Length: 455
View 1 (tube, rainbow, N blue to C red):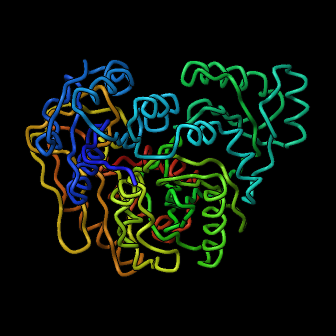
View 2: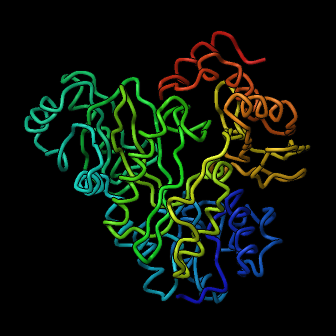
View 3: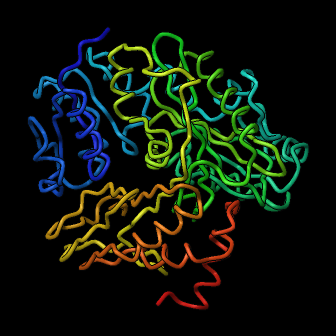
């Protein structure tokens, strides 16, 4: 068992507030850091102590591991929770935390580094029995002729991915061999710039696939469990907009089969903490794409349908405690949907920083709002545009959609542009209400919306 009393929350916004609340539930003392632009964030008054670590630029604050570790020493913490984004999947930062004698709320740096390398992760998961797409066994060769030969064997269309990638960066879809050399060159340039890693790999591209993910919790005693599946197919440029659980339209026994394989794979590689195994699903088959070694933005839909507090479980696991449940204890009840509310224009998606002149979140049975907004808050232009997550839970999917429509009608944000109007329109679209849309659905729909603007 590891004695953890003070936890540094190395993040901002709604997730920092979410972690702070979990710390209080667990009887822990949360401490916070913030940039100069974030001195009025909603979670800071809940902190035992706070410290400004630098200017607004993330590279000089939330992405500066050395500054965060100096803050950890000054604030005398035992552990660091990185949330999501920023340094949450940075193996070098995780290693530095370990070397400082602190606990990172997440997997070890060794595991993080191994799974953060998408090529290595693909090999590990295939060895553990998870189905993978046809693709390169290792990095694409530098020689264009050899790369073309290998891609011809995989078959077109295919997708080029950065081994150290994430967030849609370093990815290129290639439909014909004539486009391969240019796609590799541009993907490699972006990969070097974003991840300092030039390695690329190729996989067969599925044009009509769904994005399905399995939530895993795994302790330090070799126990791993899958606690639900989520559908994250409503996305634009690889950025998710709506998530839901459980997955509509896929038989429960197929979900249980792939979930069991995921839990077994995590136990086999020695994974600890919360993690998400992501798949593409097409024509009745699952295909592993990557594993996220952190808390997901969309974790609330799993919490709403299972009754588990995933962040509290993360903290408990980091203390060395066994999982508080067994696999057979997991029950999925009802249906949950999450809409990501972003400070951006609902049609052209341009960011909309500024002062929130009015904020009225919705309420009622089955409605949850994870947000750091308040009237008078100034949304800075320096960070991701996510300002709230609206989550509803219903008796079934139809009920959840009704509750989400009502919640979207009730929510009010003034002073900044948001994508609430887009969500309202999406919830009325026949394709979404039927369930089972693929990852290209929203792109096609937005083209239609562009011709018929949101009112």
